[in-house]
Length: 419
Ligand code: HEM
Image (cartoon, rainbow, N blue to C red; front, side, top):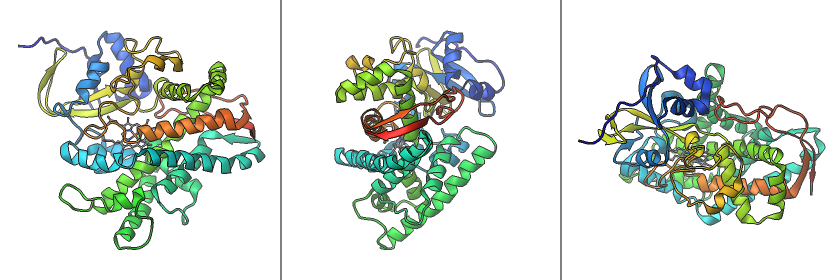
């Protein structure tokens, strides 16, 4: 008999409202109040859920023998953020096979290519920004990333209005936890973009020259599953969107990078004087310090005992991603912005987990984490070394109950100049 204890409970028939009101801090607040890194609560219509944080908790959470993803994501997330039947919902061999399709796209050359495309589009935009009185960085970067990722994936955009497309891709990740109009807008945007991409998949499969054969779009359209079958056209579309949508979402991190440069000017000076190592540490600290996804969900595959708690088959478990990035036993002064902390970091796959933890192919860790880091490094370099700007008074608040959280003003720049 292993050691067992009753888990503390956040009482209430449904704590969804508390979760939404406290946002990224809901799990942290309850962990502090209940004095335990693991507790039970009821959310999503009174469903019993276990929330947990910590390095060991993350290690257990990413153990494929203990947890599965099929059925873990709520339908409002599938309808906007993920799409139906994408890699996020798969388990076991089927997952590893599909995930390999993604990870094979993330070669060193290919990551360099997307970063270079982002720089090219940013440099094209700069002369236009110089003529503007004000530039809302978050909105502009969404367009730059849309243009870059469509070129990188080989998705033709000649029939698309980039302003509209970038807004639609943004709607998908901005609307997952929203209610009312914004959520509906997210669903509609997904439907419209899926319809357009599905046609491209069909055209590629009927031998029309839509894109080159070495592009991610072509590779996904022609990818074969474990039974040597093409993905159904909707699933293939969802997977193409699994490249486009999150790449545009890097705009959140770029707006937050601009905020960090503004909030910590001494670090900006250090960046100017330093080499690539400090730049990478700065990027890691942005991903640790600022919120993005609050949690990752999974379902207990079969009963097991861990840390005194009986995990019962079928239970929904949420891993506190934001909480791990700020856990006081994992990070010294976790609420301080300190890129230097990464100097001696042991690169554990279970403490810095803004994009999930564990393994890439066998687990659900973000397929685009390296791409995100490369693009962020390039954008940081542009903001620090290739342009000047002033930051007028504006509302730069980051709301802890908005997911994802972007500076309220979108980060306004004035007097933009190339240097
Ligand atoms: C904007 C920054 C990004 C953040 C904060 C982010 C975050 C995440 C998180 C939290 C997960 C889930 C981890 C889990 O379930 O355990 C994930 C999965 C995923 N991400 Fe990202 N991501 C980002 C960028 C990207 C990019 C740029 C791509 C592709 C180009 C991408 C593609 C994916 C895919 C395909 C998955 C599913 C992986 C799987 O289920 O095996 N993400 N991401």
